[in-house]
Length: 228
Ligand code: ADP
Ligand code: MG
Image (cartoon, rainbow, N blue to C red; front, side):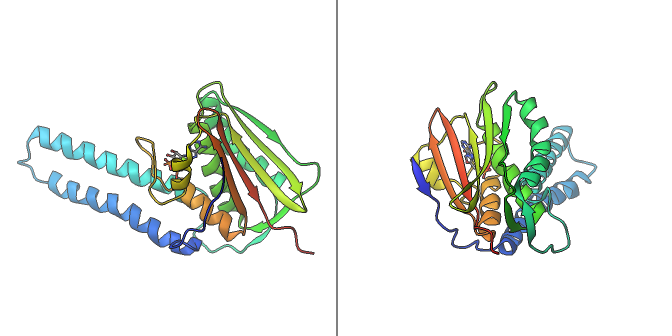
């Protein structure tokens, strides 16, 4: 199955995305605030009290997951796009991914390119994007599986391939991949891939996803050829 993913229509830029995500984080906080207000009531029964506590914790966990998927590496100040060397960036990103992979007993194989590969972007955003894609690969892969990350140049373009030996996706699932709030996980946010794709599109990367159910998934990210 091979598919060029289409442009997200209503979330064209990373800044529009930010507005949507702030809204999503505000919801659980508002709900939790409401529960706290109720919990102030001294006459509230023990069972109700526990119920509101548990709901509050769940809502706060949700806010935390949204922030993890969206904001882990974002800085408050606006950064400018700058030249980034992909092999060097990858070394930093893998440092973050390795503990997570070993916890799930997934082997991570990194195959850097012999030459330097430059792209233009904001380092922290690129990290956010790639960590979201790699985390999904690990989460989709049963223990004992493998995540392979490869860098190469194809027709002058820097290309990053992220491949997992996980559960894969069928054609319908592939169509939904990257749409807001699409998740198949109990505690998923359905935001990680949308965030990743938005950041990569802002860098003018082409995104190709090949997936075979039961076999695995491969993301092929092709960045613009370096300008002289
Ligand atoms: P979340 O991880 O919170 O579910 P994402 O937007 O990161 O949200 O991913 C959306 C969905 O896409 C996942 O729930 C999963 O079903 C599917 N998915 C993403 N990456 C992969 C992958 N590498 N292999 C299989 N399924 C994937
Ligand atoms: Mg995810």
